[in-house]
Image (cartoon, rainbow, N blue to C red):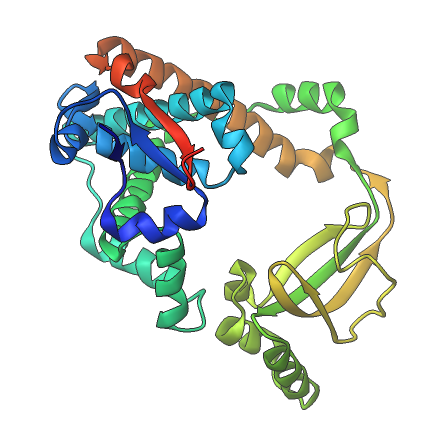
Length: 325
């Protein structure tokens, strides 16, 4: 018997991707198959159906040939298991330490993300394209916030690097502190050319760039008035393909949409001094310390946890083309 491991609401999404997840060699009912536990971490359970749904979501990023490659498929399966283990350990630790996601924080995060879309319909369409219901999406967002809260709790007491540590890092990594030529960009990103042209006209009439960016830009920098920061000239991007005059409004298109932008400054390639590099050095050294603390925490949680994995069922989940080949 063959079982399609996808909810009815997601079948359209998976058919568009031209492959299906199936469990083979089984004689149980569809419903019972989906309920088989395949991973357990303490009291947290991932069923075969949930595993298949998570696997399908990851596989949709690959072409059909890659998705059917046994080595690639096994790596993706391992990632699904690892993600579930980490999320389970995070939830358990948060519960023991009385760390929870407040409703008002979740609501604020939902509103912030929804504001990046021009309207409710566009937002709902994005969820549908990903095969997610609004409740499923909120659950994921809640988990993301919880992970940040746990990491903040774990990393709050990490000491800042000393001057000696920073100077040694600077001396050992001089190549990391060379800066190519760059331009400082302000931009407003919108979905259509007509919207971009309208915004350009309003800006030329004297409207504040920062105000327009905060109100209309779908890019994250819109909330800071459209300040994209320094963009290096040695990268392939729309801002450095030609020499734009300083302060002049321009419109360009790429995969993210239509950009109404202006170059506000330029700088030549140069090497940073120690003082100029200090902010980056502090960030780099703190990141290294944080990574070490988090890895050590995760290792200890895994050693203390009760983890079970049903490799027999997981190995029977494979990818099949929509046509059955």
